[in-house]
Amino acid sequence: MADVVILGAGISGHTAALHLKRMLGKQAGHTVTVVSPNSQWNWIPSNIWVGVGKMDKPDVVFPLEPVYRKKRIDFRQAKAVAIWPQGDADGERGAVDIVYTGQGKAGTEERLRYDYLVNATGPRLRFEATPGLGPDGYSLSVCTADHAIEAAAALRQAIDRMKAGERLTLVVGMGHGTCTCEGAAFEYVFNVDHELREAGVRDQARLIYLTNEARLGDFGVDGMTFEEQGFQTSSELWTASLFRERGVEAILGAHVQRVEQGVVHYETLDGASHELPVDFAMLLPPFGGVPLAAYDREGRDITGELFAPSGFMKVDADYTAKPYDEWRAQDWPETYQAPGYDNVFAVGIAFAPPHPISQPLTNSNGTVIAPAPPRTGMPSGVMGKTVAMTIVDRIKHGPAAEAHTASMAHMGAACVASAGASLRTGSAAAMTMMPVVPDYTRYPTGRDLTATRGEIGLSGHWVKLMLHHLFLHKAKARLGWRFIPE
Amino acid sequence: MTKPDPAQRAASPSFQETVAGADQPVADLSKAPLPTEKTLKMRRSIPLQLTRFAVFNARIMKMVLKGH
Image (cartoon, rainbow over all chains, first blue to last red):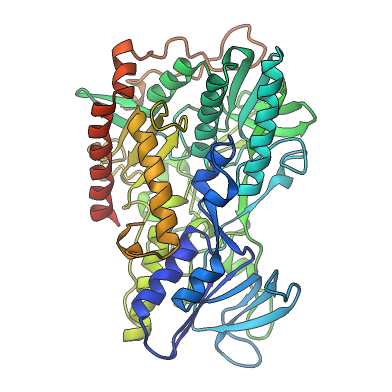
């Protein structure tokens, strides 16, 4: 009999929970418990469409409890606050402290025992890293469905003002020099462009993409090399072409210092500071780890042993500090197992990456401007399933069973950035990369050129729409869900 | 050394220069290639895009089978 506790019900945690329950089958005694402060699951990639008013919140979220009830997965609507990986004074089984946020028990504390723990807590949205950033300040976000609804309302107001003859400046991008998820901001800016064109006010708008990427097309993965018509070209050229075609301006290598009503203050890689007057600002926050304390059996704080200063959990990566030129694909984790604990794992955004993928840069003010590595979507789901397989093997065959592996230096990912939601007039920039973390020992360009591609067209929009429906179907654990790949 | 050959990168144009005299340090994209009218039509062509849809999905499935 084993108890598995999963912290977080995002893409990686939810995927792990469903596969664990499926693979453990009806064997008596094993429990799978998901702890999430949110009562709903959110297909975050489609928040982009909520953010331009093309979808409503119910299109991208659904309640978790009925799904878990159907699959016989225990669900605690609660947030984890501390873990006891060595056990506590009452026993040597690991434990996790949770505080309920719902289910009629808000504020109630509980200590859950586990045999296996999966940390899939996702990101903490660090709006506070930039003064004035975020829905509680002077900018918008599409990180949650509720944020996206606010963004859509603000966009609608801006469009109304432009229809009344005003000329407005709209900025979309990254709210800090260390943000990740540039692809989401890229996608949102082109959806805004599409909406403005559909509303007939594109000429009234100055649309700016403000990013911490030093080059267009970097996407936090150091850009990509594509092979087209027998020549090698770059994601930078490909992206720049789209920006020029759509008339979207780009400010590169930017760190937002603060946001005030109608003004974004930022500095650039040359150290200069700038003020950008804006009428609409959707700026994503940097991510941090969801704060979790860790204690040994005697109650001594061992948080620093389990977690990086960023709050992300250390796993089987090589965290040795070394210069950019010495970074290797092999530094990236394979099993997602916490050092020293063969029953604790961290997946998705919750694991601490060994280093960025793009080269981090520092300007003359000492400000670090470095896109953080993305580890969302496809890779998140794969990690969740991989860890589930490891845990199932260890439950069935003993704790010495070898861990399954899924390094981001071996797995591919697809990034479909919608550039307008319409079945006939929509478009998307669709990219595939293999692997996510470039490996220059295997490929001269870091990635497999036959699998690393970028194309723009209506079909990309169909792919994005198909993924929306497929992944919601899968997350709801409906018929055949297990055959939909991560 | 495991990083890309700088010459490899230099083979592709870069767009890090800013527009001279602009009120903001916006990237100068004036040299970025624009799609031709034919390319734009192809991006909207339903029959062609149906093919691209199939090809893209096949590529994803190949990646899933190879790397997951």
